[in-house]
Structures are given as structure tokens and as C-alpha cells.
Length: 479
Ligand code: BGP
Image (cartoon, rainbow, N blue to C red; front, top):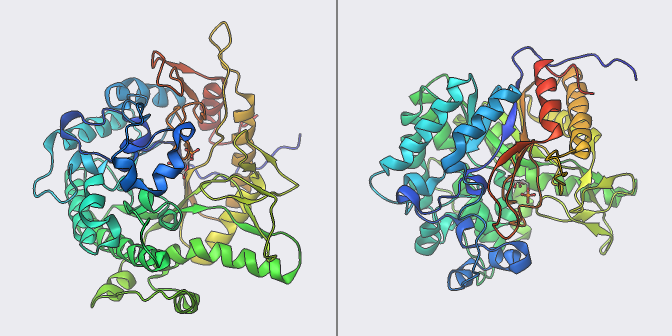
């Protein structure tokens, strides 16, 4: 094998990522209010239907809710952070659960017990020299805000969010430097309940409501960016995109055009957050889809003056688009399906595996914005087997990460500035899309199954040692 040149900068932030709603559990403890995920069953009991019709879901009893206990990170985080420190993590990405701080979202006074939990969690990270990377909103708009306002469809959410952001910025201003305003902000178009705490079941012009809600989030994100920089000028505040470049199915110009359009659907958000204004192509899109944005005085200035410091994104795979009206050969992907790419293998869940696509995606985003990138999610959801001696030989996961780290290194060599890499689900957690535990991403195994059975005991997979070696060598030793 040829020696690869190592382009990782010395201060590169290696680490892992989780989200409060998928790992904490303790869903009503210490004054927490309900989060969207708390009313959802797993995929085998109608999770997707429930996700799309949350108001109906409220009146159902599914018997088992994976998020209620999850992996009990709320009580076991010390042990988990110690394991991450053992791997050599430089950073740990998690999110703050909004409903722990403001149980109803619009409360006047924050919940001290919730604030205290994150104080302790961040202290625990800092004890090991691990830099917390904090998402303010990861699929976690308090459920009460859906019931009262239909979530982000209502402009008042901007103030509730900015108030929440102010409280956490001030509280953790000496503990947290890296912030993300919204996880996968483009997901509001695809999973409006997770992305925006909204139920669109009876909405006629769904595009209108989705893009209006998106405008509210974009304004909220810009206002929070402004505020964060005022509270601590050292803060680095980023946006977050569910990324993955779209390839044309063939060299038919129709396919090329379809791919460009598909990518613009996501870049639309980052164009606003990184450049500070709505992209020119959005005007035609709005016109042709009967979208009329209600923009208030001052909104456009706030967007213009408060662009993000860096661009973070999740990358699981590239996508494939066709200009043909019907093309049936689809496979699953991160939330939305894509055409099957015959050159790629796929995970057990049908997500295609394309390491070179990460290099393509990094270069494309960097070319477009010229701001530092941060890869904050990348990983393989797979079923693991625990051998009789307790070992878990997840060579497939090692291969996945090795190939992606190699391409990330190449992209940095291409001139892309990249601050760090946090693998998704560094410890096994509940899947956002399926609610399963079986879809594991971790280097740390958690003994819990799809029905919520298991001891919750943690153990190291083979990939644990591999990642430890990668970090220790700053990406040089990936074999
Ligand atoms: C992203 C989310 C994460 C995470 C990941 C993997 O969309 O930001 O929360 O869950 O996808 O998806 P899944 O859990 O469905 O496998």
C-alpha cells in the first residue's frame, strides 16, 4: 500500500457526536418537558407515520418509547466521557435538550436542574481536555411549542429560541467555545416535526409553511450568532447541513440539471447562513411554488450582518438524481431516498457508502463558501455481534471510517480548511430515523436491544482501539 501524505493540521479536532434526544433518556427527570422524540415509537410500530402526523400520535399509546430511557446517558455520562477520553477525543459533540432548560419552550424562567446537568457534563469533558461542541437545537423543539404554536411555523418561536440561546451562552460561556445553531437545518423540509416541531397534516400549501418556518429559523440562527459573538467574542458559531453531493444519473443534461437542483435544496439554507442573503435562484422557486415569505423589517439586515464562522455538516453518502420523470430504482438514505448508484455498496439499511463522495462534498462546499468546514457526523449504522468472549469485531465499521478519513485527508490536501471530525454515534444510541438500537454506530457498545431490554453496560468494540490509534497519530496511522 502506498504511503499517504498526512495533511491533518496539528490542532485537528478528532472526536465523536451524539444528540441529547437520542442518548440521554431520563425523559421527564429534573423538570424536563416533552421533546418530539418522546412521543414516537420505533420503526416497527409506525415511527414514520407518527413522525408525519404528530398530533394524532399524541393520543396513541405505543407501549414502548425508545427515547424514554435510551442509553441512559443522563446518569452514565461520566463513564461514557471517560471512555471517550481513553480514545483520545479532542472534542465531543452533543446537544442541549431545549425542554430541559425551558420545559414548555416559552417559560419565563429557566429550569435550574436542567442547566446544572449540562454544567456537570461540560465540566466532565473539560476535565479530560475535551472541547465540547454544542448543538443548540437537534430535532428538539419542545413538544409544547407544537401544541401551542405549531412550532416554527409561528414567528414567535424566534424570540423563544433566542432567549434560550442567550441563557445557555451566558451559562456556559467559559466552558463551550464551539456552537451549532440548528442540526441539519435543511431537514425541516423533509421531517418538519423533528426539524421544526410542526404538524403539517392539514396544511394545504406545505411549501409555504415549510419555507416560512425556515425563514424563522434562519433569522433565529442569525440573531443567535450575533448574540453569541457579543456574549463571548471567542465563540465560534456554525451552521449545520445534512450534506452529500448529488451526482447526475448519466451525462444527460437533464440529469445534470436535476442533480444541481437537488443540491440547491440544501445549499439554499447555507447560502443564507454563510453569505447572508437569499440566493437568486430562490426567487423563481418561491414564485413557482406559491411561496410568499413574510419578511419583517430588519430581518434581511440581521441575516446579512451575522453570517456563521464555519460550516458544519453530516455526511453519510452521496446522492444520485435523474431528470427522468419516473425512475424507480431507489434506495434509502439519510431521511430521504435516492437513486441507486451501481458503483456503490450499501449498509444493511440501504445507505450507500461513498468515501470519495466525502472529498467531493468537502471540496464543493469549500469552493462555494470559502469558510472553514467541520464534519460533525459520519458513520455506519450496522448490526453488531457480541462474541462468546464479549468481543465485538466490527471490521466493517473500521473500514468505513478508514476510507472516509483517507478521503478527508485528501480534501484537506486539496486546500480545504477543516476544523475537525466527529463520528456519528460514537457510543451506540437510538436511531433518529428508525428508533432502533440495532442500528449501531458506536465504538462503544451499549447492551440494550430494540425492545429496551439489556443491562445498559458499556463495552469496547474493536473499532475503539482503531480510532484511538488514529487520533494518537493525528490521522497518520489508519490501517
Ligand atoms: C442525522 C441526524 C442524527 C443521526 C443520523 C443517523 O440525520 O442528525 O441525529 O441520527 O442522521 O441517522 P439514523 O439515526 O436515522 O441512522
